[in-house]
Image 1 (cartoon, rainbow, N blue to C red):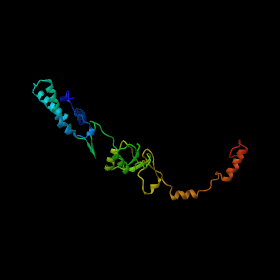
Image 2 (image 1 turned 90 degrees about the vertical axis):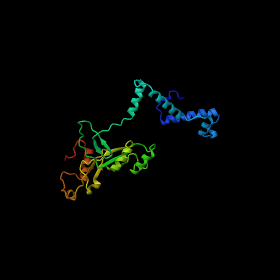
Image 3 (image 1 turned 45 degrees about the vertical axis):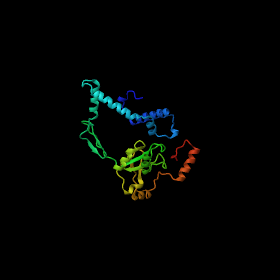
Length: 250
C-alpha cells in the first residue's frame, strides 16, 4: 500500500483516501463494521498501529536523510537540492504598470492603448437561467433586480461605480453587460419621455415638436391639390367603373 511512498506528492484528498482504505482493512481484521460504532482510535489502539499519513511522513524523512548522505555529485541529490532551492524562490515581481481601481495593467513594450472614455451607465441583462446558480451569485442578482421573478429578457441600468463593478465581475458569466452611449448627447430634463434605448446600448433622443411648430401646422393654408374625403370616394367609384382612367383625369 505504501510502495514508493517516499517520493509521493500527496494532497489532502489523497491522504483522506489512504486513511479510509486503511481503516477498512483494520476493521476487517478486527471483525467489526461501521454499524458497531467503534471509533478509529479504539481500533488503532487495539492493533497498536499508527496512521498511514504519519508512516508516509516517516519514510519521506528517511529517504531525505539517505539522499543527503550521498556524494554531492550524485544525480538524485542534485535534483533534490535543485527542487528545494526552486521552492524557496520568490515569485516574480513586475515593476511599473498602470494602476486602475482594483487591479494593475501591464501593457506590452511599445503598446499604446487607444483613448477610451468609460461609460457612466451599464445595461445589464441576465442570459443564464435562474436554476442552478450558486446562492452567493443569486444574492447579487437579487440586489440588481435580476432574480427569477423577472423575465430573462429584462434589462436594468447600473451605475459605473467601483462597488457595482466588483459585483458585476463576480457574475460576468451570468449576465450580458453593454455600456450605454449617448450619440445625440446627454438627455436634459425635458427629454425624459422622448428617449429610446436600443439593444446596442445607444440612448437616442427624439426631439418633441415645439408649440410654434404645432401652431404652424394648425394654421396651415388649404392645399388646392389636396383631395378631400368626398373627392376620394367619388374618384374611387370612377376608377372602379373605368379602371383605365387615372385618378386625376377629369
